Image (cartoon, rainbow, N blue to C red; front, side):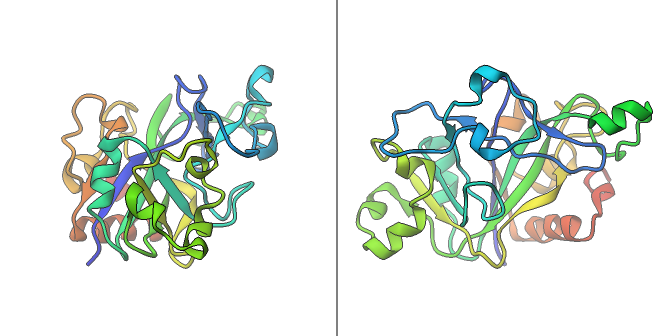
Length: 249
């Protein structure tokens, strides 16, 4: 049975100052953070991503740190992830081919213009009132995680899989771990899966407190979370069957 690690990704109130939105039906938009390091080749900007999210005009031409990459997402055609922070890389390097990585993001509760005009609030009951943490996608690992040293020794054909990843496009490759997702079982979700309670984004629901290794205390929404095989099985069942009420039992 596979194990899993959940990793926080995406835009937040520090970078670039706005979160991606989650809409009343649970759909959302993945918003990457800006690229903070010099790049060795051209990378997409926020404008290139053709986003629905309203962004300040002065950041539209800012290069983005497109990581993770999802095949369904703009400017992407495969599933890759790299991380240069040891606190995230260490638990990821403990995984193996066939294990899962869940990606979660903090998202701001948002209504579309058409919903604003009706004056009705028909939000799904599991959406937090202002912001919350939600799983937005997953990888089923196609191969064992690759350390920085192992990446340097990959044959060109294997290394090419990661060509579009933001860490590879930097002037200096700096990832401590690289991941490749199996195209058959990796995906950017259509509907987010809640990690926060319906009452407050800062309060963790049972997916965090009972299924993961995290206590749900303090800023849990920034930390990696480990899931044992039975918890992975339940988490996949919740998502596949839209059983989001099980996140709160």
